[in-house]
Image 1 (cartoon, rainbow, N blue to C red):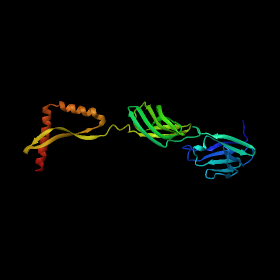
Image 2 (image 1 turned 90 degrees about the vertical axis):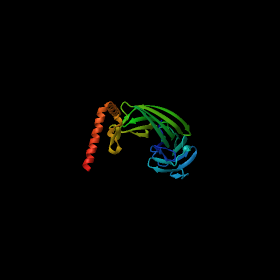
Image 3 (image 1 turned 60 degrees about the horizontal axis):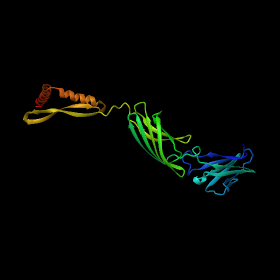
Image 4 (image 1 turned 30 degrees about the vertical axis):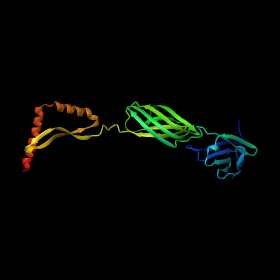
Length: 274
């Protein structure tokens, strides 16, 4: 069925529509007329360039029709009928809110991450959003297999609640970042949460510590602790443990010789100073 006059949604925000402007367009090109009248239900709101509610509605006449701008849109502006009239022709349609015409990204977002091995769990707490999104986890640019569970409730037009996401990576989780990307409606996506990862080349934090080997006695009963410096890495724990066991297996003679050498060197240095 064709219409000589009809209106369409010309401009609608991709974020939250409430509080923004929504533009409708009445197409009169088939009539060759520029003048049009707009009605909301049975109330005339805009007539041939004149707004009866200038704080709420404005518009513009163009060569092929008429624009109606609904300013500072609220819930009462939707799911109600608008009529465009030109000459003896008219077209009435309901301005509907749905996932294809209305998207509201979360007003508040909180997230918590749990990473165990290659398994990832993300808990999202979202406030005031529409519609309920489909979310995926990405490791850098790779999309992971994701399971999603929602616990939400709707208040007026908006949803509130939590979304739990579990994912599994086929590779080690290190380097770059993890992100949760949520699709609201058919074409609106948003990064909801990000977790930065430690670089894969980092094996651990190096640190130096002193291993106590024993005590030697020098003249005048001066006590000197005998130690050696060991470089340790978190990833080299087994190597450090092996060194400790190796030291324990040293016999008394070897340790005595080590201590004697230390004392001789120390005495030699003292004599040189004198």
